[in-house]
Image (cartoon, rainbow, N blue to C red):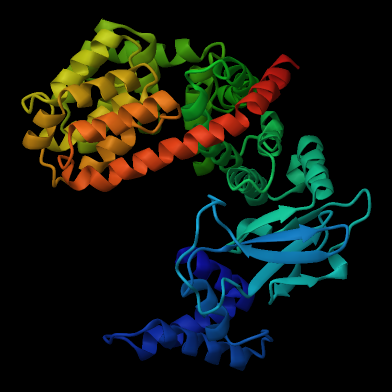
Length: 488
């Protein structure tokens, strides 16, 4: 909802949007309203301002709120042809819900050519041509400026190449939100089989020059799926080497602006991105990162009453220090967890404890989950899911819930809200025929015994099938790409 209103505010201008909103709130104070009342008041403000729109606000916006999803807009910069299509992450899925608008939108496309002035263009049908959107050999076109439109953007291969070249040579010529958008659109278009997966991966090549939060966060979120699919395979080594190469300059940047980690960055976005820098640097083995997190954690162990770790960094420092340590670190964190009086602190420790690399500690932690004296019943599901998030913990958690399913189901309530997330969390990495068969066997062994997790089990089976398909299609090219890039 907020994304659609942001788009509306952009194409009618913030001033007009504020005026319409003001009269709407004033007119309906202490009363009920329906969404058409808002359209009416915004239309009144538009009429007063003399703004020219291709259709009324109601006609434009109904297409965004009364049909499912959003479009992908494809621009061919060789011909100026521009098309829209209902975006589906799974291109093989069948849309059974009909739409009164036939899944066509009135799309406000903002665009710029080679960093020039921002232009506005309305795409009002399935396809159209805008001659202004053609580019010469040295020009590049960027659409959906600052990502105000609620749609994805695809380009012809040549324009993608020119955008990638620009990102590699002068990334700051592209607005920061659009640097994130290029990554996000490319990865999602690749999942939808619209562009090649290696094109998506190439959008991350400029990151060694990037220090802003949004592009890093977007890349990290999209690469998470690659980690889930490949962190138990030969792809993992080259993938880690590539990310290490990209994140090392970011880690050093934060080391510098925090004066060797002695202070917190002033800028809020830098504070967020410092977490990404430390987390990715430690998980890929960047020099100095392990020493940094274990040093902070050790200082806390020496003086438990004075925690020197900044609240922003607690989750990532706890996790990395416990992963690098052994039973001493784990037992210390456990005692801190048991004595924690603040819920958020307890949750960070609960997560950190799941990061250990020692199977016996993870198995002990799993056993603790079924002892309400040690871990509250309402926290047990989350703890098991945290453990399953750890590559070493994942098979342990899966064996554990299969072995103890009847006990968990009867004592932890098949009707519990978080029960579905248990199946969901433990099976996220599943991507092989063998794992699919294990899931089917699990379903057969406990027929009718899944309660609120029944739908999650079906979804897990579907997702495993989709993962198997994706891995079969992408594994070889992803391995080759990371291997080549890591060795440069």
